[in-house]
Image (cartoon, rainbow, N blue to C red; front, top):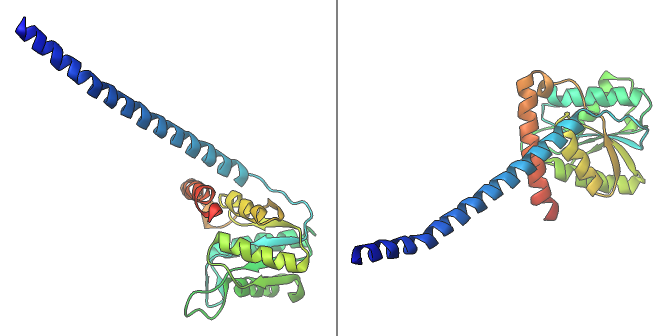
Length: 218
């Protein structure tokens, strides 16, 4: 009897611990499933938005910057600029806005390199390309663009960037108070292979979540 009572007391003592472990497990599992669900939904939104191509008339064509070397746009940047030139030639907007600053030691800003590329390679007058020589990332570029847009009375814009980047970039422009839609380039390294496309979707899904949770509320 004494032995049985001891065993029963030990079993009773373990029950709260088992319950606590069970609750912790359920809580962690719930958090994991919710996080996985949010990630999955966001990834689908990024993928779905990347497939859109809205060429409605607008006040401006806004080209997100990318790297340049000695005034020459990289393949990523050039593909965006080529697409912006196509939209301009189709009469989508009378003005192209290039954006982007420069790193220490650079002779050209991304915005200036973009403007020079458009003017030199296409039948686009200098007056039709406005360089906004600020912005080290997408959010700063959107903020700089919004300020210039307000000064010029621009209210609408077609956002040109890589497909997977379109959702985040367009959302940032909209959050600055502008009406914006996207027409992403279908060329360039970000869409060369299935692997590069998948990597871009993954990267932009994480970027979109970071923007919605952190950057947007700073």
